[in-house]
Length: 186
Image 1 (tube, rainbow, N blue to C red):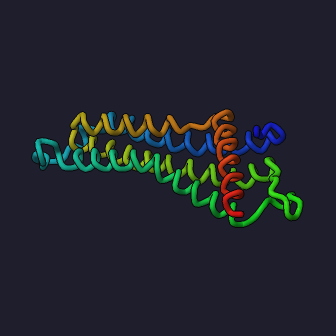
Image 2 (image 1 turned 30 degrees about the horizontal axis):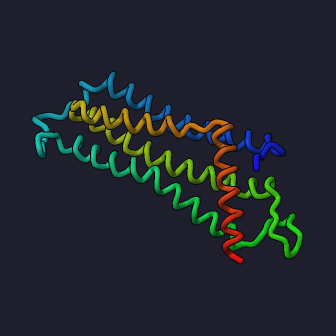
Image 3 (image 1 turned 120 degrees about the vertical axis):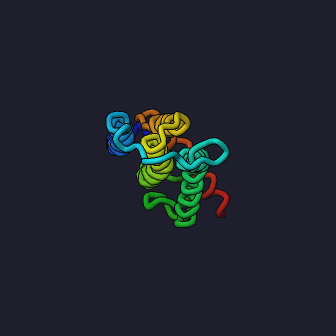
């Protein structure tokens, strides 16, 4: 069920998604670079408050990173499931013959592309926020755990960078899921 009949549309969505995720990634990288260059200037006066032997901001960044990393995988899936349910309930595509359950994959793919971008942005944002927070914690407390959390979250963000093949794979998978949900609606 490949979307080979409309590669231009897939390419446009892929390029836009690459720009979005690339900008998010570069924002974190630039901020981390600034942290290394101005890190000593931003050192707080006095000692860091600690809990369990770890500075408070670093501990908060670690917890936030763990929670958001898990959420960056399951929240986009919830968004996609809700979107597919909505599309399934809205009926067959406009090019479908009345009474037929056959769907036009190109039309369905066009309806799924905004859903792809939405879930990608949500998942990426759930990785980007903790990366910034952990970078800030490292700048303030100079604890390497915070830097590690920032690195893990940055890696999770980079892993979401879309390619044409990954977008086509996502569309193929979710076209099948949409078709199944439409059959279940009968």
